[in-house]
Structures are given as C-alpha cells and as structure tokens.
Length: 183
Image (tube, rainbow, N blue to C red):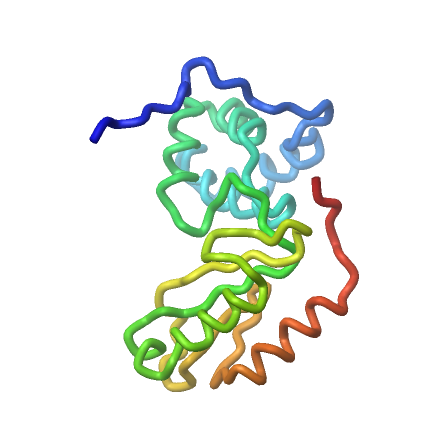
C-alpha cells in the first residue's frame, strides 16, 4: 500500500476579503485574554474555541491570522487544530449532535441511538448534511454516566435518551430557522 500525500506545499488557501481577526477582536484579546497567560502561546486554545464557536469551524485563513497575532508559526496553529477532536476545519451544521460513546453509554444502548440518528439524517459521524443543518459526532465520556445514554445537541446535555426523545430533539432542530448561510 502506498501513502497518498496531500500537496500541502502548493495548496491554495481560500481567502475572504474581511479578516477573521478584526481589529476589535484583537484589541479585546490583547486587553482581556493575553494578560492571563505567561506567553502569547497560552492564549491559543481559548482563541481557537472562540473562532470555532463563531464560525462553526476554524478556517485556514483564520489559522494564519491567529499565528501572526500570537507570533507563532502557522504549523503550530494547524498542529493544535488537527490534534484536538473538538476543533474542525470543516464547517459544522446548525445543530451539532454529539453522541457519547463511553463504556457506560455503550452498555446503556448508545449504539441503537447513534444508528437511528445516522439513518434518520443520512450521515455518518463527522459528516454534515448537505443542507448544513446537522453535524453528527461521536464523543468520549460526557461525564453523566448516571444518566446514560446521553448526547449533546448544540452543547446542551440531554440525558436518559430514547429514540423518541432523540426524534423530538431532531424535529425541534428541523423546525428552527437556519442560523447560518451555507455554501
């Protein structure tokens, strides 16, 4: 089997006209966030969280801007983004469903719920529906073992889930207006 290499050295980064790191955002981070850390590098994780929360992903252009702002190499920022499962370079849907797959949730039937969601929304974990409405994730322990099986729907923990409860949550998310424009 041969390794397939990506043309990283010649890859073009999609750019938009307006920067992800606005002057106001950099000023806010400089006054409120950077003083909390011994080095600028310490602020990388909270900055990545904020960008992902706002844009539903961390675009490559934003990584370049973050690297310049913090005095890091773009590779340092990309390494961090690609190391942690909580970050993504692919745009997440309006409703992100994270199904816990811990040992306890497994014993309490998480697979049945995950399979139901997969079939109902026609997507696999780490995929987003074509209309940009839903992203499905599998997650490690969400820390609510006594109420398993559990899942996050847009960062809100839902406990003692059944297929009926999952269907209600999906129906509710489908009824909500789309919050982002999708391309």
